[in-house]
Image 1 (tube, rainbow, N blue to C red):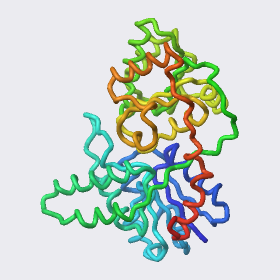
Image 2 (image 1 turned 45 degrees about the vertical axis):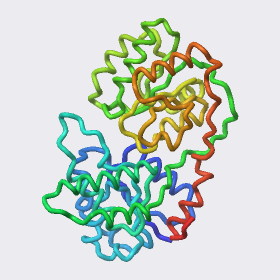
Image 3 (image 1 turned 30 degrees about the vertical axis):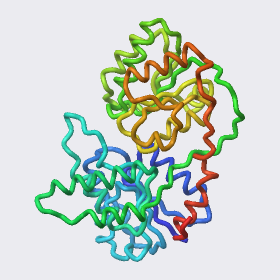
Image 4 (image 1 turned 60 degrees about the vertical axis):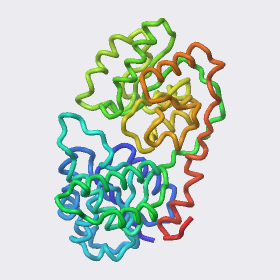
Length: 354
């Protein structure tokens, strides 16, 4: 089987998914085309042109399956290379633009939303990494199309798409580690992108309050950092200096060691469709504490969720830090590992329903 794998905006999680998928299904003949994760507005509209001009010979070949991320303008690409329309076309949604929280200085991402929508409509199979991703895409597209200057009969095709869509998460590697207790049970980890949509303001506001109240904890703030980060990070580095054991992106070995020793990993995000960083930390033994919104209610039992407010996060963290007996058991992450999903991905490519 020859599969063309297209990743138009190769963010860290997209690259991990593509590389691990190819490694897990090594019987497939893979051809990967990817584009770097920068210049978002151009990338999402320009990826067919970039590939046509740079990869014309590759795209002119025959493939049995075209597997594209939702950033790929699949409808345009098939128009430029009509023979690709004869392959089975699968679109994988790591995220969707209809539920992305737009900051005050951003223009609405109309073009990106339309690329997502056209790609889904052009595909033979549509796959989402979570049910929340699927539902927020369909519901967001319905609301978006209601704003169009004509009354488009979109409900029926969108609901049909919801019914036939599959949910296959991005699996995490199988862990070879044995169960263990955290060596630093008061170590709190933040391992997310340093961007506004991850809501660092709530996270640090709670830690400021805990520190002012004299609660003992250590802090490792890691994750992907960009040239410009929300101002709260600079303030937090100063105000929480006595708690910090790591600050900023870490070498792979150091990152793993911190996850292995951590007691708690926290999310305060406004934008998450699966949350690989939280899953990875939970797999290695940290207790996840996530807001009761987005994809999290379907993934984490109530003991690992707070109500999504600063007050709720403060109450739960304060209890976990001051009364270790109140903490829940380590979460079993085996259901998220590749061993649980390899066959489903194999069947997706071979057009066999699970």
